Image (spheres, rainbow, N blue to C red):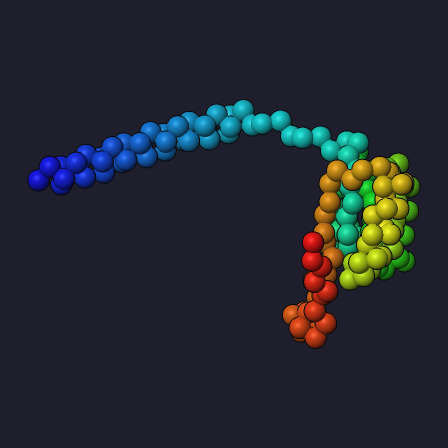
Length: 147
């Protein structure tokens, strides 16, 4: 009998705690709706975007450059990437193109070193490259690096 009473009390107490947390979260959400938090400025950030010759990576590079970030545009397709970089620079923003095959580890290391020499330490990184098919991962598994 006492154990059942104790269990009922604990259940009631937990329910009350959940209601209090729910009410507090509703008040917090209402406050953030009325007074939203300030957006973080990306002006002056150094951004590296892999896969900028088309699609999401291209649009992301343009938008971040317009917001004042220094953009490192990285893609295996240097022709389309150079067109993007030229367009960004002609608009008065800062961008530099790098050719890189992300499936080649040495190429990635070389490119990241070149970015650090050109811009400095990268503060934002975006990976917008195409994802290989599962078949290519099975036929050519990546080398396992033991540390």
